[in-house]
Length: 146
Image 1 (spheres, rainbow, N blue to C red):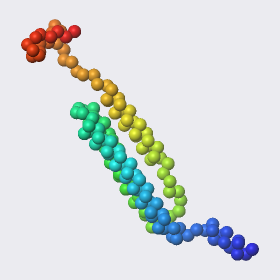
Image 2: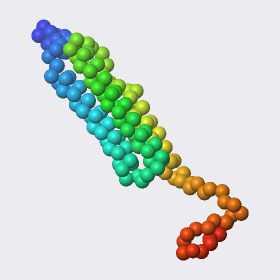
Image 3: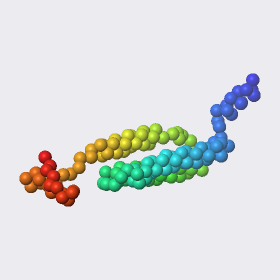
Image 4: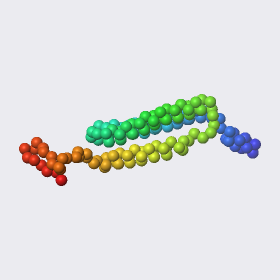
């Protein structure tokens, strides 16, 4: 009986220094996953820039995605460094992050909505014409616009 009570008390008091390699690898794995998401977001921005056509609308959408990717890289590095410092000190506490994943999802929805809004809001500018007539060089004819 005495041995079982000793093992139960020892099981409750876990030395976190024994679990260090697992924790370090979990920290690195989380860092790599955040970087993978940032590369995906940056790839979306580059794809918009290269294959989305020309114009300010495409550049705005690409800029939003690229800025989000850079912000995510900075966040991932800061979180990795902060958690590594906590692991070296042997701190206890919560290691989860509940705020930033929600912000990333909201950012994706926001950036996609802006992209769709700018894409489907393609009203071309038609300059005002004198007496609604415009002459063109198309086959030497005068074309009337209404």
